[in-house]
Length: 490
Image (cartoon, rainbow, N blue to C red; front, side):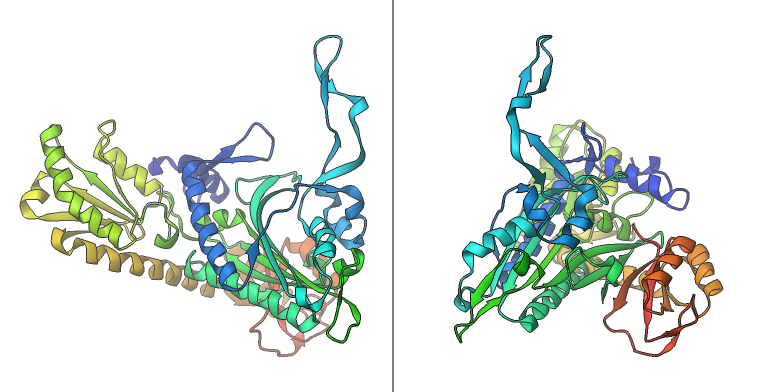
C-alpha cells in the first residue's frame, strides 16, 4: 500500500502519479490524455461539486446546460478568444461511418458536415449566441447562469487531474446592465472560490489579478486564486473573468435600458475544474498516501473490527452499532469494514492510503474495557477512548483536523513567499527554496517573457492585498509600481 509509494523528496512527480492510481482516484483511459475517474475519486469530486453548487445558488446563480458542440463560425466572432483556444480544439467534420469493400469501418465522405463543429474547450460562444435570444430588456438582467459540464482541450502533455485533454468543471456565465455590476460579480466569484479553497479544501490561496499575457482569451481582467503545492510549485486553482462588452458586441447582445436606450450588456465568466483534485492531493498528502480534509472526505471515519471467528465479530458489531448511529446522527460519514477477505493490518494500510481522517479499531479486549483505539490520519497519532465518549470526541476531532490541515498548509505557504530585490537573489530562491518570489516588475510583456525564458517562472498574479511601494524591476532595473508574485507552476 502506502509503503510502496515513491517518496516525495525522491521524485515528487512520480509520487503524485503513483498516489492517484494506487489510492483508486483515477487512471488513464484508452484515449490518450483522457482519464477514467474511479468511484473513490469521483466521490471526492461530488463533495466538492455539492459545496460549490450550494455556494453558487446562495449567491443567486442558477444551473443550465448548453451543447457540447459549437459551430466553427461562432469562434471566429471573437478574435482573441479563437486565438487563445485554436491550438487545443477538437473538430467534428463528419457524422457517419460505413463499411468499405474490405469490411473496414471508414468515415463516410458523403456525410460531411456543412459546417464543422468544435468540441467545446469553453462555452462563451455558444452561450452568448443563446443569450441574444434571452436578453431584450433591463428586466432580464442580471442573468446569472452556471453549468456543470465536460470540456475538451487537446493537450500535448497530460497528467491525471492536473492537465487532461478532457476534464470536468463548472463554468459560470453572467450578463449585467453596467460595467461596475459585472466587475462586482467577477470579484464576488473570486471570493467564493477562495472561501471554498480555504474552508473546505483547507488550502490557503492568494487572490490577485493576471497580467495581460496570462489573461483569459477575450477578457479585460482575470481574477485568480493561486495555491502553493508541497514541491514549491504554484497552481492556479480558479479564475474569474471580467469580459467587458467583447462577447456582447461579437454576438450582438443588447438590452433596452430603463430610458429605452439600446445598450450592450457587460459580461463575466468563471470556472474551477477537476484540477482541484490535483491541488487537494498535493497540498496535504504524504509518503503514506492521501491526507483528506474531513469536509471533503467521502469516508470521515472507518471502523475496523479485530476478531477471530464469527462470534467475536457479532459481539463487536452489536457493540459498535449504537456508536455508528450516533455518528451518523451528527452528519458524519462512517464505514464499518467487516470484510473477512482482508486482515486488519491490510485494511489499516488501505485507509491510510485513501486518506480517511479517523480510524477506529475495536477488538474483544476493547469490548471488555468499553474502549476503542482512535487513530488520526493527519498526525498518525493514536489514543484509547471510552466508547461512551467516542461520538463527541470524533465530532470535535474532525473540526480540529480540518483546522489543523489549513494551519499547516498556511504556515508552509507563508514560509515560501520570499522577497527578491536582485535577479541573482530571484534565481537562487527559485532553485534552492521554491515557492512564490515577491519581486518588482516593470510592467512590460518583454521583461515578463524574458524572466520566463531564463527561469521558467511566470507571474502568477498581482496580489490584491499588495502594498503599493515603488521600486526597481528585478531584471531590467526600470521603475516598478508594486511587487508581483512569480513562481514555477503546474
